[in-house]
Length: 171
Image (cartoon, rainbow, N blue to C red; front, side, top):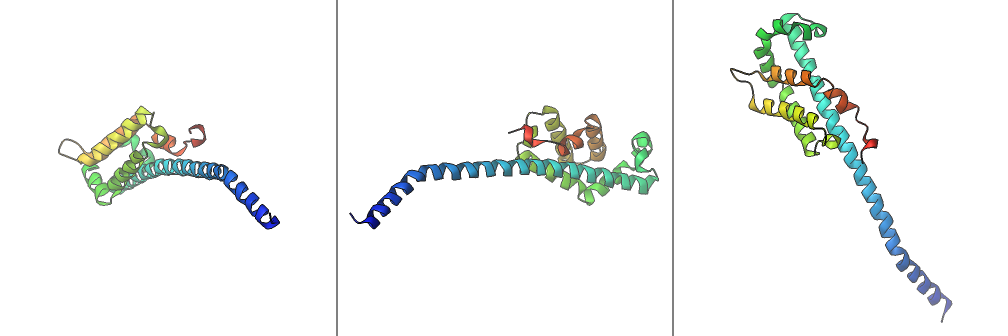
């Protein structure tokens, strides 16, 4: 047997033997990459919800200051003075798409299965409640802006939890 043929046969045998190992390595790399992408998506979706809540509050505070003169740092203590302006504030928040963007961010977060908060019943209830209130819209008896503020007041750590989630503890 010619040496070139012998070397070719050995190379072919080596390639066939290494094929399952190469497949296993490639599959594991893809799996790790997909897991990392999922972690990033979950974290990004949670951060977007927190950002939209920030936008809701900053827009709300700006509208309150424009309409009432109450500075943002006094809003929580002076909610009774703001009540007569809530409907106008609510209308502005809807017109400026703040509510729509918040609802969309929650939808996208829900699509991740609530990310790493899938076992956090309180987080799911709060976000679902905000979403439902926005979808229902304001009525003669209820103003969405007031509902969202009340929901968030009952779970004040929502934004901090959404932003500070460490996905290294959850695999």
